Amino acid sequence: MSSSRYRNVEIIDGKYFGTVVFPTKAQLDAIPTYTIRLTRFDRLDNLAFKNLGQGELWWILAMMNDLDWAFGFEEGQLLKIPVNVDDVLRIM
Image 1 (cartoon, rainbow, N blue to C red):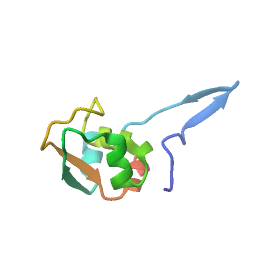
Image 2: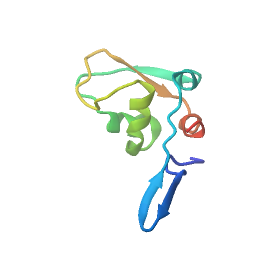
Image 3: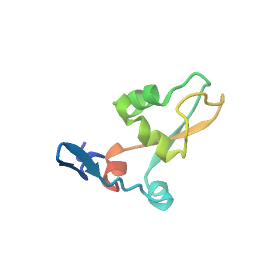
Image 4: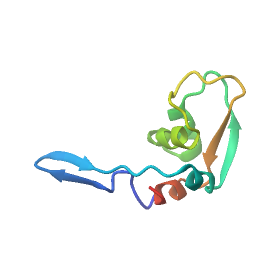
């Protein structure tokens, strides 16, 4: 991965400060994705590990699908997954 979501973070007097820049819906919609059908037992961290290679990237799936909660999906719900996670990190 070429960049980190923490790249705008500064350490000042031992405390972390930073700006999180969230992409717009239009920017997220422009990213190539594929979809998977969920079961009610799926979790975002497991799906991120399986599809993106790192469970810690669950927040990308949540952001791309406008999800507030990482558990309790409805059976059959569709989830968009970015083809290349670097496309998401590049716009942040």
